[in-house]
Image 1 (cartoon, helix red, strand yellow):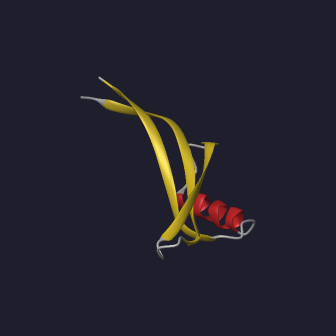
Image 2 (cartoon, rainbow, N blue to C red):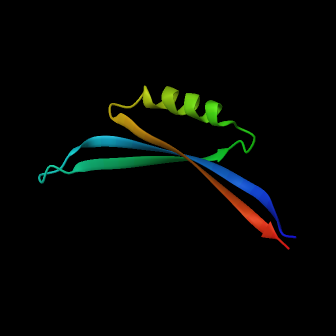
Length: 72
């Protein structure tokens, strides 16, 4: 049976940066690498909220991106 080995975690914050000339929402993202693999969802959300306070744009979405190696 195959197994997966968690190699890394990234935290991605997506912000609303205004509207373009057509009235469409402009989104900007910032990705933080080298996040502790053991971090819980609540811990990552709290970190995202703390970081977003330093930004003028509105936080729209928080993403956790894990990468894993699949072993046979």
